[in-house]
Length: 260
Image (cartoon, rainbow, N blue to C red; front, side, top):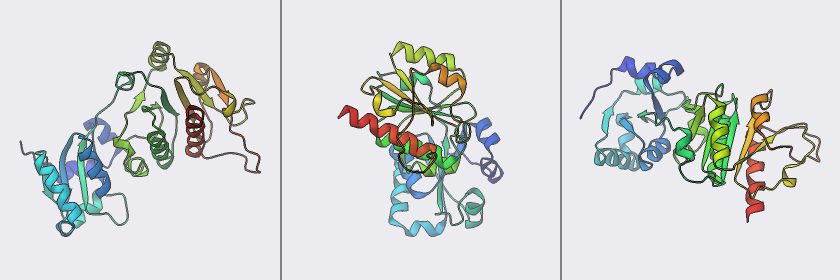
């Protein structure tokens, strides 16, 4: 059924508060819209400017949207710029309903590798963490309350499509997470800068949750209390610390190394 979306409504979705209230978000960029359609996400309407139709790739996206009975709507370049958060928008975007994954979606099958992002504030960091988790074959990413908005366009853009490949779940109650971990015998490995135990000294062949904390303050006491091991990454050089996304990527690939 065709549905119209007032321009004022679309513009409001650039606000975190409105995205949360409406449980919808604006997805920007050719690749992101392609990935959302390919992953069968609940796309409500594809928005495009007349100029983009000259692109064969965009025509393919519009044809795919039509085949899925997804609304298509031409918008002006001015509106496109207002909805976009990039300086040179690609001219195609989509209105998408949030899937709102829950922990049970991750734990439906026995997970062997998950990532927990605790209070990550930088959208680029969270997006890169999701991308690395996807590349490493993790079954999902869990984020705690206080983490940057999952549907921030910078987060989605930094995932380079991985946002649509695995569930990303926001948890409010750590008791629920603790219960799921106990049910599936998952160990929580907490990354902490000055921990005496190194990541390579822990058995990562077991079902594992790798936890990385806030860029400034690290992991919260609540997460540290859930951890079976607190580990650091060997750094023989002069750098004092690693970016959160880089740190969890190293932890992920140490896990892969042990499992090969």
